[in-house]
Image (cartoon, rainbow, N blue to C red; front, side, top):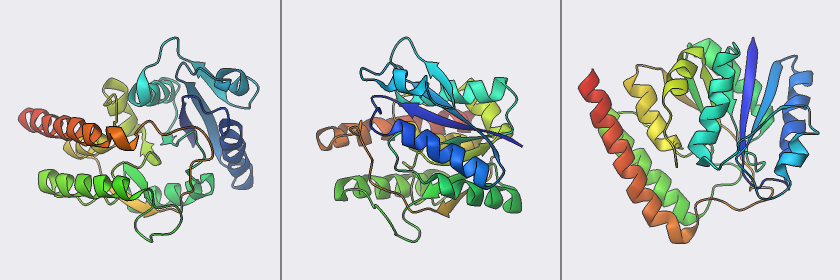
Length: 237
């Protein structure tokens, strides 16, 4: 069972080494075939130099593609190189690698295609800012209206997908802020999705791409993307 751990990284020099080390430590501790695949999204800091020295697949993009393009690059690598699963995790240290075995177990036992790590099921650990939580609750409501599926942490970038899902996202993956839109994509393609509680940490370095001043723009843009994806895929069915 080969598992690619896709880590998009833009200016994550303060945390990326620890993220990769934790993934490799979990692989040894649980006898898992985990392969960290770090996508350096044309960082302006030392991220590229750091990952070149780590035990990982280092992919350096020549131009900045944004989070969606970086993640899809990792998914394409996983799919084209025959990996059975891919795990998406952030490069800032928020997502606990020790939860990976639990995600794999849940996917196997419940025959799922997508497992989303949620910080809001048990409400332990870092819960994000008040404004971010409002946005997350809004996307939870929007997805319930459109597809009848409750996902408490739509913006979570900690996800496990199987090869069936990999085939889909290798062809198309949302670009700028992809996580909420991807839920619609997975559901419309008939994939089985569920959440698992995880205890997340505050980012260990770097700066979030979604600032408070851009939160309204973010919500507006993602809302349009979600609605258009819903309409486009509904018309195909």
